Length: 131
Image (cartoon, rainbow, N blue to C red; front, side, top):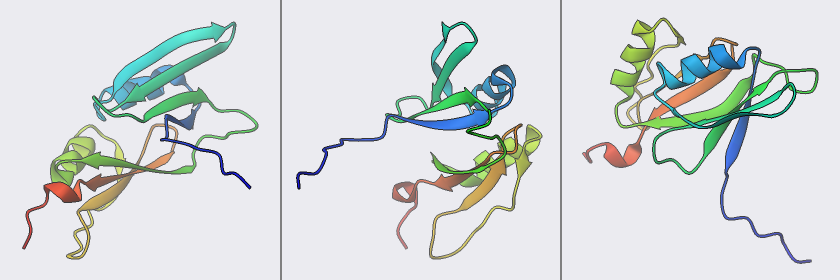
């Protein structure tokens, strides 16, 4: 059997109840940029956001029967400074969990968007000094 050939992940969908509220959160406190925002057909709006320069984007799709909001997305966002990101999201009023500082792993934490979708932030391990 021949395997399909894939070369990356383009977009991951995040179900949201209100795309405008979600867009304000993802581009505000999270600092992501809008890559695409258009009504593709009446009543069907597609919104893509991504970290500047990132290859993978997040599609803020309207939640419905098939994809409900308030889920654990499993999405891990990378930051050069988890402490600063944790402080900024806390200051912005986001629902942020404890900053985990384990010696064997980079600093990380989880948080929720306005729809209760859980995302994770982890410090880029390549930016941590050896030692």
